[in-house]
Amino acid sequence: RAKQRGKGKYAIFDPTMHSQAVERLHLESDLRNALDKNQFVLYYQPIFNLDSGTIEGFEALIRWQHPEKGLVSPFKFIPIVEEMGLIIPLGEWILNTACQQLSFWQKQFNVPLKLSVNLSVKQLNSCLIKVLERILEQYEVLPNTLTLEITESMLIENIEVTSHLLHQIKDKNISISIDDFGTGYSCFSYLHRLPVDVLKIDRSFINDLELDHRNQLIAESIITLSKSIGMSVIAEGIETHNQKIWLQNHGCKLGQGYLFSPPLPPLRATMMLEKGSSQDSRKVQF
Ligand code: C2E
Ligand code: MG
Ligand code: MG
Ligand code: MG
Image (cartoon, rainbow, N blue to C red):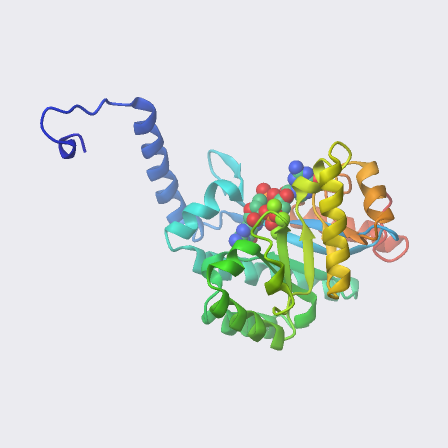
């Protein structure tokens, strides 16, 4: 490295940069074995009907159970997994695990529960349809109970290919939602051309609802937009009772957030469903 900078120039040895590089190498080598060692887990965050208090479904959110570091956030490892090209096998593991869990819940509780799975941009390729077909058939999951979450930036990246693929997904009756809506390019012109079923209002707008009038306007616009083009809308990151009430008053019917529940390990998510089904079906008090 230092030599490349040319004669007479010094590269100052920076110990933090060095330790970051070493840390990254360790992460990569740990990640290479993590799938085989069964270190990934899916957590499930319930999505509620705000008016009735029933659980409509869950969003699957991955964690890495690292032997020394404990639970590692997807923000820390998904980008690396993507760069390493491991997102294809990991993505398949995620879809497989999520649908197996969904199938179990649907049979156990005999309800048309839904499940959302986040996709990475690299998974948007022609193999995805085959993988989805196989998994849905294997676990006898009705396609319309599975939702795939993509972000606005994933749409923009390669609009022609993505649009074709989304139509193929829709032809299979699988639902599509746009995650973190409002934070990306928000190019409204593509929306009506794409088979999108759900818009998810990004957490950042919900967080500051009470403090920032502009966020109210944005959230309101997204709710209105979704209605006018016939999509449903889900609010992410509801943390306070006031946020919930505001959303209800503005016509948003579905939401998830720490006010109701954080993402839960599978057993705890099952317990939450049980708790619900012992009262009115899937109804949880909040
Ligand atoms: P996302 O899909 O937008 O997921 C929502 C994130 O908000 C989750 O973070 C969730 O734990 C968090 N959250 C939910 N309610 C609240 C709340 O009330 N307050 C706050 N402050 N946060 C809340 P998480 O689980 O760390 O996931 C982060 C991101 O990582 C996800 O954002 C998604 O983009 C990505 N991700 C997670 N799981 C997967 C996966 O299986 N595959 C892929 N490709 N990406 C994933
Ligand atoms: Mg999501
Ligand atoms: Mg989101
Ligand atoms: Mg987000």
